[in-house]
Amino acid sequence: MRKGGKLHVDYKHAENAISKGSKTFHFASRFMGRERRNAFYAIYAFCRHTDDLVDDNEGNPRIQKLLIRDWKRRFIEAYENGYSSDPVLSPFVHVMKKYGVPLRYPLELIRGVSMDISKKEYGTFTELRRYCFRVASVVGLMLMRIFGIENAKRSKRCAINLGIAMQLTNILRDVGDDARMGRVYFPKDELAKFGLTIGDILSLRRKDGLMDFLKFQVERARRYYREAMSCIGTIHNEVRMVIALASTLYREILAVIEENEYEVFGKRAYVNTMRKITLYLRLVFIGYPQPSPDGG
Image 1: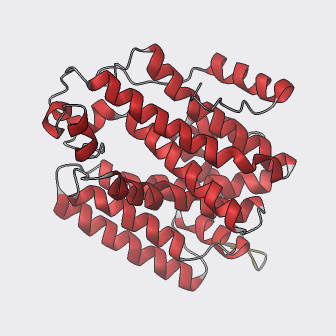
Image 2: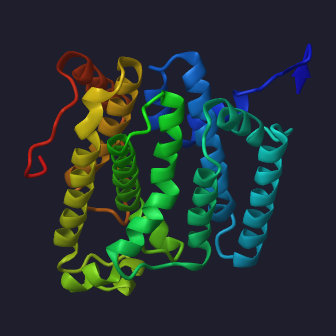
């Protein structure tokens, strides 16, 4: 919509999307200035909507493929035109143009989300890592642009690793929900090493070896967090707090999973508001908690 000859971009829908869809990211976003915050909302809303096209139509691959195909077409059309009347595409395309977000990143995200339509299991971690890159790391690469982080190789590597860490955390948090939808993200070869199968996860059975397997997966996620946050000191103050807080809050989900004694089938780990505030205050007064080499 144009007002007085200028393009007016409404971010209300995007803000509502993040406030309902991710309390963790919404909490972290409060510590940014309005301009970056709106851009953050726009990117989140686009990613959320793209993901929901598959998750909200689970069990009907034909409808999922049609919706994703149509969404991709509409997105590319909006990008080429430079604007859209769609409440999700309008702010997102505006942000892409304003901050120079490469077209390949959202297209890679769409490609990754599309994997959930037909790919219900992963043979190796290499396959899973590729999925994590597409659905999460590219989000970090987009955010690098709006955060004004230099496009250096090290910064890119940190963004990629943080995306993988967060997606691995999502997978651990959502094991039960995903299994009920017929999805298992854990690599088959790694399950086998602990005497487990895809079928064991789908049947929601706590077999011998499951806890050790989950401990192994939690430690891998923590290792990616450590690698990702190795460059936190090079980022300017406003953005440093947001990244450190989002990373800390997400990493805390792993601690909650441990506190729940790895009950991932029937109990969804989450970080409550009081705990979030405590973590924030710790960041302010102590700084980002660098985990020890043994994963503590």
